Each structure stands twice: as structure tokens, then as C-alpha cells.
Amino acid sequence: MKIYTVGFIVGLFMTSIVQADVAPADWRQKLSDQAWEENIRKQNFQDREIIEGVDQTIFELKVPHMAEDATVVPISVHTKIPQTDELYIKKMHIFVDKNPIPLVGAFEFTPDSGKADLAMRIRVDTHNYVRVIAELNTGELYMAKSFIKAKGACSAPPPPGSEESKRLLGKMRMKVVGDVVLGEPNLMQLKIRHPNITGMAPLKIGSRVRPPAHFVDTIEITYNGKLIVKASLTFSVSMDPALRFYFIPEKEGTMLVKGTDTKKNAFSGTHDITLDS
Image 1 (tube, rainbow, N blue to C red):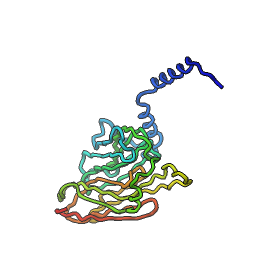
Image 2: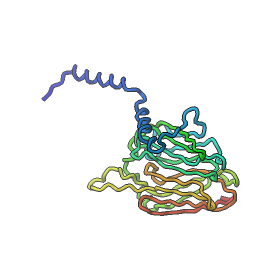
Image 3: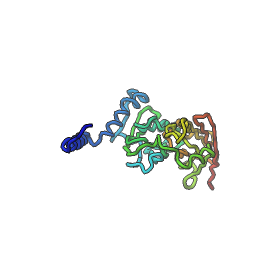
Image 4: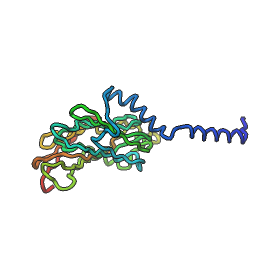
């Protein structure tokens, strides 16, 4: 049996303080950037130039500094250019650097969206950067990133409402935010009932089998037959995926949303757009 002196214990304590002081205050940010540079960027964009910082004037990313609930973190992208036939945001990738699957989703846009703004809720597994890369139809890439403090979202147990989401799987709710204005970008809100299981939750007491991942993996949104947004998603999207996006209605018509999940379930919903809606 080893007996430690008070001096030895104090020495260990002081060493830990010194080590903490030596570590840079932004070490988590540096680890996140390292994950981005060494893995995510190379796999998705190779050696293509990505414009960021003060030279990036295409869009703004809003993310809370600290997550109140890491399983439902609200994020939003606010673009600064209109979607026109000549120049528009063609694709947008959303990443969380240190999530088990860093990609949250890849979103494809058309000029019929009017604005390529997005708002949604995501899972964030640890302290790291959320970053968005937007690609213009002319090929340029632009990036914005925001650091967030969060912990354990991807391995968190299913919330109480997950059983209800399973029962209502694929059911949708849609509505226009505000009055419909023809010929202008209108904000649309979409919610799809789905448990969006990560497959990483702890085992239940007495169980030897962890529920496999089961989440919405594709969404396609059209208005009067014209594509507005198309998305490929991962389990980093929160339960009951909710999405805000824009579209331009040239006349009254019908919005159609089609979706699939990783168990090959297919679901769809429609919403009539009228000047009274």
C-alpha cells in the first residue's frame, strides 16, 4: 500500500494547474479546425478554394454560443444575395466538425427559392464549430463558422415524445409565415414527425440490443412542379425535423414535400398556397 505525503499531493495539484495554464484557451477551437482541415474538407472539397472571413459576404450563420439542449440546437443561415437565374446559391453543406457524422445535411437550391435561407434544429455532440459551405452556380465556395458549447447529443437517450413520433411517422405540417405575396420570396415552415434515432443511445436496462439508427435521409420540395429545395440528411438533424425555407409563388398552387428514411419508408404531404392561406 502506497502512502502519499501532503507535499506529493500538493505537487500533483500544482502540476495540473500549470498544465491547464499551458493549454491555450482556444484548444477546442483548434481541434475542431484540425478535424475540418484533415478530414472533412479533404473528403468533400479537396483542394478547392473556400472564401471565408471578411471576404465572405454571401451569407451569415447564426448559432447559439451555448446549447440549452444539445439535442435541439437552433441554427439559421441568412443569405445576402437573391436567387436569380444569373447568380444563385446552388448547394449548401452544413457540418458539425466533431459529431460522429460531421455532415448534418446537403441542400440543393434553385432560383425558384428566391432566397437560400435555412433554419432548422440539429444535434451537437461536443464543443466545436458548426460550419456552412455555400456553393454558387458559378462554382465559388464560401464558408462561415460559429463555435458552440454542447455535450452528448448524439448518444442522449430518446426524449419522451419519441414514441409519439414513431406512431405518427411521416406526418407533415406546413404553413406560410405571414401573408402570401405572389412574385416575392415567401417563408415556409415544414415539420415532419419522425424519431430520427441516432443508433448511439445507451442500452436500456436488461437489453443487449441498441436500437439501430433510423432517420429521415432525403427531402424534396417542389411548388407547382418546380424544385425549390432538395436535401440529403443525417441523424445530426433533431427529432421531428423542422425546416424553414423560402419559395417564390408566381401564382396560387400546391407545395409537395416527399421524404424517405433509412428504413426505406416513403412519405409525402401537400399544402395549397392561396392568397387566403
